[in-house]
Image (cartoon, rainbow, N blue to C red):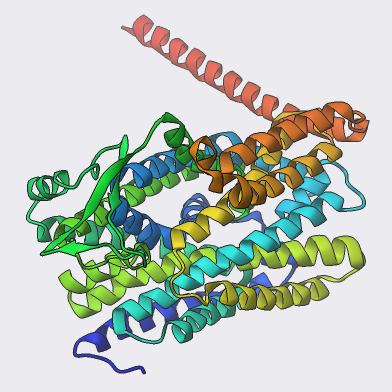
Amino acid sequence: MFELKDGDVFVVLAILVYFIVVLTIGFIYAKRSNSSTSEYFLGGRKVGPWFTALSAEASDMSGYLLMGLPGLAYFCGASDVGWTAIGLAIGTYLNWLLVAKRLRKYSVVAGDSITLPGFYSNRFHDDKNIVATIAAVIILIFFCVYCGSCFVTCGKLFNSLFGWDYSIMMVFGALIVFLYTMVGGYLSVVATDFVQGCLMFVALVVVFVGSITMAGGVDNTVAFLRDIPGYLSMTTMATPLVDANGVQMVEGSQALFDVPAEYGLLTIISTMSWGLGYFGMPQVLVRFMGIRSEEEVKTSRRIAIVWVVISMFTAVMIGMIGRSIMPTALLTQSAAESIFIVLSQTMLPAFMCGLVVSGILAASMSSASSYLLITGSSVAENIFRGVFKKDATDNQVLIVSRITLAAVLLFGIFVAWDENSVIFNVVSYAWAGLGASFGPLTLFALYWRRTTKQGAIAGMVTGAAMVLIWHNLIKPMGGVFGIYELMPAFLCSCIAIVVVSLLTKEPEQSVLDEFDHYMDEGKMERNFEEVLDRSLMIDDIETEILVKAAD
């Protein structure tokens, strides 16, 4: 079952080195993380800009970065994956620009919140913790699915590399993630995310450059792909000709394609709406809350944007170049998600291949650890202590958090048990659910003074419900209804927040005063910066006058 071919020993050795590193980091931070719930769930708000940036993006870019995106590009060409990547890049930038600094500031003003559900509840002075409870339940539901997608990645990796049993290796990867998350908490997750983010970046660049060389250069690659109908177009989508089992048909040495599908403006807008999801991603938003200071947000934003743009570009290119190198090697959409692994095995020495494919483990494990930690913190802090036992000690909360981690682990394994799961599809469903539930609420909570507790509840419930309804009942109708469920669900959530907030009583004066205090701090900072700039300008002018006078 676990036989190794010649050279595979070095691949396994490199992966073991990676496992040892991440587990060591977890144990290093164990003592500090377990000193309090604030340290365990948010690192005491002491994380610097580099760790914050790479942790936010590595935890966000799960297995779909190194498997989902290349697989979709390999199978269907540029349009679908290209517009998705563009939407994600824009969403990343806007989230850092519009949300990061404000959320860091307001989460402190609103009761020094250490979880996202806790912030929502404190923002509206919800003494009964209804808002936090609903938010925690939504996180629990969709993060279980998200964890499953990460575990799928682990299983597929070892199955593709060595032919080892998918289920056993999927469970093994899940247990490794569970172990270092349970022991080390937020700080271990952030530190391992930093290492994993660097590894993912290097892996993508190495395979991208190597695949271009292997394909005989850019001109040869473009010439080959241009002959596939609609493959390089951004307004049509290549359509593989498949049999009844979903396997692409082959004639000679060529994979067969049908007439390309139209990719119109509505579809483009729908696909780019992936970027809306960022406003509601707990694994990203909690990084904003944990950064060391508001002044370091700009530095983090620049690092994050550069990382995201280069990583997604290379991931998409790897899939497309892989089609030109191995046009008939991967004939189902699920199998196509292994193109990164296959190229790594083909072009790299064994130990180097092991390090590079560890980038896939890094992508899935960094995300899974974040999902586990956020789910555990939400259930323990906002449901257990917030509703059932308000006098619970930090130690009791940490125990409940770890029990929740174990429960989510088991459910994620259940979701991932089908080895034919398509990572991109699993992720898109969970992404829509979280983005529509929390994205509008985050924006309105930070920007609209008049938002009420009832409006917040209506927005979350409407967003989550519309994702389920649209995906399962409306989307199958096709046509204009075939758009990605995140966009209509996001809009419906916004409408629900506005309508219900206007129909319900204005927030209490204490809520309004707290919002004004949070906004006034921002104005004071801006005014201080303006005064400082003017003082510096005056100093420069005075210096210039004195120099001229001396001359």
